[in-house]
View 1 (cartoon, rainbow, N blue to C red):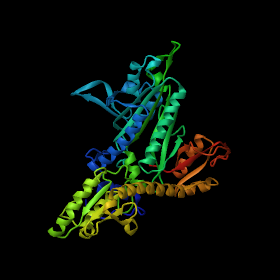
View 2 (cartoon, rainbow, N blue to C red):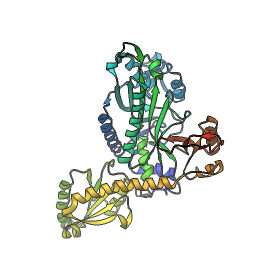
View 3 (cartoon, rainbow, N blue to C red):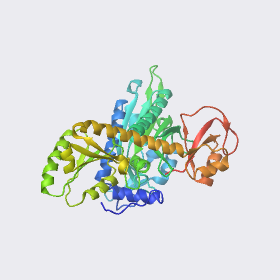
View 4 (tube, one colour):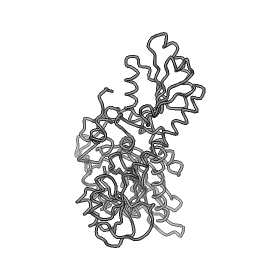
Length: 477
């Protein structure tokens, strides 16, 4: 960690983001172009995310499994829309063991094809349904323009794959998992998200319908933070996933897939970070508390360190880090842990020991506003209350920012101006040409058609034709 200041978030958001990922030691650039090395601090953050998601998946009846990293090319060719959508991004293995392979193998970009092949073997009867499987792993997509966490050739994620007897169950599962993602984003990430349906041009290749959670970043761009797809019977028919129903009739299953990746780490950084560095929500932070002893000599150290040890015992139920480094100053430590976004800092010096108090500093409220003194006797309760308050405050701040930068333009000219400073929420007729016009002229895309919106009728913001739904237009990562 260096003492170099970060670029200003306001002046150069992209440079601020890149430098922060490196300085906070979340990740580094790999020797392979477009890939990243996730460093221990970044992986600890991702582990907390995976734990929060995995708990939710299991609570909704899903189980984990693992499928191969290498997939025969012929599998992709079975589902036309799927292979067309992914072909530009595929990494293909043609040589193995020094010999040319009889059939090229694709390095997994997503697993619908290999999962569909296995489901066709496993599913024979209505008694075998539903199948609710999730996989944790990494995938490779040959991106041309990459950015740490947000878009890399290889990234880490989970992908759920389920099979159902009826279209109603399939749609229910698709929306259930969208709700799971939204709950995780709000409750753990402190990130307000909009749940919505993707346009036909923006949907997943091979899906009937795709849904996403969309979040507004600190530069007002949108980030697709998680997706859930209703695949209908497209993959079932391509891979012959059939079962005998209760009437002994052969039927195709209905399938879903859904995923959330390490780009959510980027979402946390860009939603909450400031010019001092990361601001991490307590529920996900690798360290919820950093404890900093302050002393000038051995005499003061002898008074402070027993209290530090006592505090460590009292706070063993929290993720706590004691910074006992003696080669750097307390001021350096303050800046270091602010950069890393630890939600709560507790300082213990000789005067604190004498008074029976502890100094608190909240990361979400820089400067004097976030500082207070707490009676040692009230420590555990005050820590719990502070972390809860920080989590809630971070969400409310992000929500207020999104509301302040979401506009309802009156006409197309106003839409073109407001996407420079946020999202445009407007009527849209659903026509691909109108969608393409907005993208070509403003670089804004349809992010999603929010599921929660007032139903009614209006006129398309682009062409003036009748419209029955509003959509969010925004520039995105």
